[in-house]
Length: 172
Image (cartoon, rainbow, N blue to C red; front, side, top):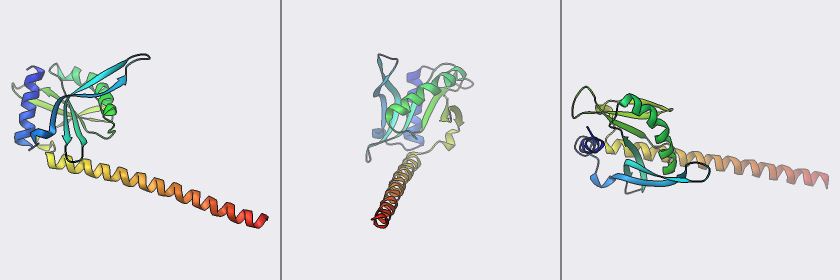
């Protein structure tokens, strides 16, 4: 199976089995150019990206490898980490889709977790609503963490200011 055939089969799976809106699925998506070595930059192109058009957020990124999936998974983890970094969405789910070598016209799905590719059963693969909800929850948690961190820093500065004021009064 070629990468194009694999992509077509997976697109069909997303749209018809997991109810992803076709308008949210983008193929051959240019990402930011990243520093490739000390003097040059490399433009990255993701095979497939699921994008929330309502919030303008990436929901997931996919890479297709038509070769032996044992080799592809090892080589692809580093590549996908660079792709995720290029999106500016550090918690973005990254998936690898490879042909299922034991059965024609089928594929396997892996998710990148802690630099390792873990298999995902098709039945357990999130539908569009679940993926969108997870991303929104992750973004909300991230915003809350930033808010609490900012508040904690403000309280520290405020306490220090009060202390300096009191010390100043006592010394004068």
